[in-house]
Length: 277
Image (tube, rainbow, N blue to C red; front, side):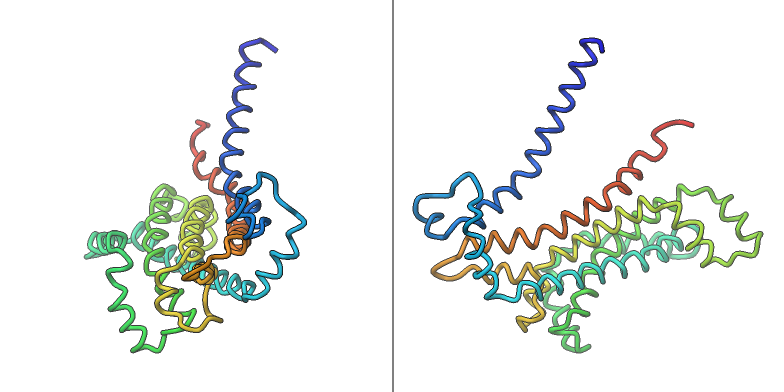
C-alpha cells in the first residue's frame, strides 16, 4: 500500500477514534459518577475508573423511586407522539405536495409559525384548555401537546421528500386503479423511508426529552416521565449526585439505542442521490 494512502487511512481511523471518545465520554462520566459514593463525590472527589463494588448501593438508591414506571411513561409519550406525528404528517405532507387548493400557502405558513412560538408562551392557555377537556394530569394530553410541536416538523420533512418522488410513478399506479390512500401507503411511503426515519427521530426525542409540559400538567408522581423524575432528585439541602447520574444513565440508554438502530436509515437518506447512476 502506498505511503500516502496508508497515512490517510491512519488519519481517518484516528479521527474516528477521537470522535468516538468525545461522543462516549459523557456516558462514561455518568457511569463513573453513578458508581461513586456521595461521600466520595463531596469529599475526596470523583475517581477516574467506575467503582463496580458500589453497584448494590446505587441499586438501593434507585429502588427508592419508581424509575421503571417513569421510563415506561416516557416511552409511552415518545412512542405515541412519534406514531401520531408520522401518521398525520404523512397525510398532511401528501396533501401539500400533491394537491393544489386555495390556502395551501397559508397552511404551510401556519405550520411554520408553530416553530416560532415558544412552549412557555402557550403554557397558560393550554393549561386552561386541558382543564376544559379533562386532559389535565393525563399522558394522553401530554402526547397531544407534544404532537402540536413535532407534527409540523414531520409534515415539512415528509412533504419535501414527497416532492422529490416523480409523479409519473403515482400516475401509473392510479391508472392501475390503485386508490389514493394505497398510492400513499404502498408506493410513496416506502420510497421515502429515510425521511420518515429522520422525522421519527425528531418526534421521538421531542417526546423523550419532554419536561416543561410534563412538570406543569402532571400532578401525580405515577404519571411523571423520567425527565420530571430526575428533577425531583434535586433537594433543597442535598442532591444525591450518584443517584441522579445513575438515573440519567438509565434514562439515556434507550434513546441512544433507538438512534443507533435508526441511524442507518438516516444516513441512507442523506446519501441518496449522491452517486450518479
